[in-house]
Amino acid sequence: MKKFEEKTISEEKIFEGRVISLFYQQVELPNGKTSTREIVKHPGAVAIIPVTDEGKIVLVDQYRKPMERVLLEIPAGKLEKGEEPLRTAIRELEEETGYEAAEWNHIQSFYTSPGFADEYIHIYLATGLRKKENSASLDEDEFVEVRELSLEECLSELQKGAIHDAKTCFAIQYLQLKK
Amino acid sequence: MKKFEEKTISEEKIFEGRVISLFYQQVELPNGKTSTREIVKHPGAVAIIPVTDEGKIVLVDQYRKPMERVLLEIPAGKLEKGEEPLRTAIRELEEETGYEAAEWNHIQSFYTSPGFADEYIHIYLATGLRKKENSASLDEDEFVEVRELSLEECLSELQKGAIHDAKTCFAIQYLQLKK
Image 1 (cartoon, each protein chain N blue to C red):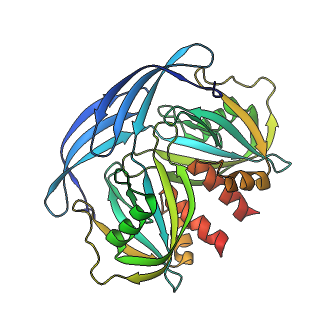
Image 2: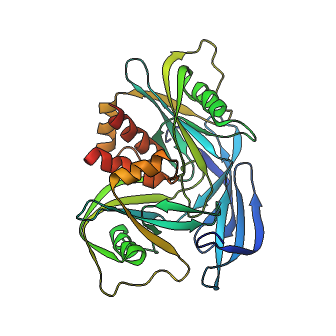
Image 3: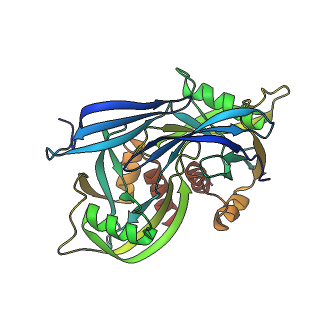
């Protein structure tokens, strides 16, 4: 038995959407009691820390419907079915910012909300940036505004309480440590 | 109009659970086209970076049903309805680790998965730790194992690919920067 394993007694698929699915499970706990689990399945995602030759970090302002507000974030996107994460990252960087990168480095992968969702996000550092001539346009239903900030400007935004996104906080710390 | 606002045309509540709710929306995009949004509502959460006087970080191994595996994480928990986040943090630290802290500092708050969920997590640094004599027992349906690691041991776990949780990666970088 895996440590603390929770055995699935029954599972009901509540919803299958374009992006996520929702499952409702009855589980048996390690102490033999039963409980329920509400589980969101997500295809996984990538996020990119794009740094220009001048040391600017390329971020995007993006409207996020769950909280009905614009968040300042590093570029990110969902994996297409069967897509290799690096390929998603290359595509999303171009679609959201118009940049392509000469160098890609995988930094870290992590679950964003392990209590209720299986979303797993792969973080890449992208350097050697250059604007693509005919860059692929954005997703039809995605609207973002690109902002290029120095690390000091990012830290100032953070200080002001203007950054509210987990992966972006992680990215800023990463660049601070790398300095 | 807020920048890039997506207006809700219609909203259907698909599910209301013990922890999360799921909504399906039709929205009008800034370009006038329509799309759909799948949105998880979450009560919000706290996570604690507990550091002992000896400089050990108090972590927990916890089985996470969405990915059917044990993750090594900093202690965390959901907000009860109307509960002030610091109170949740004090309670969760005691329930999960048996520690109480003399000093609490709010470090950062962020959305964990802004693309599909509104979960907002408040991160606290807890120091001046001491074991409580009669600490409150764990949630009935929560099983965790406490592990106390030095920062160097945390970095080594990270290096080995043994840490897969976003808030824990954030916490480790935070402590590296603080050193």
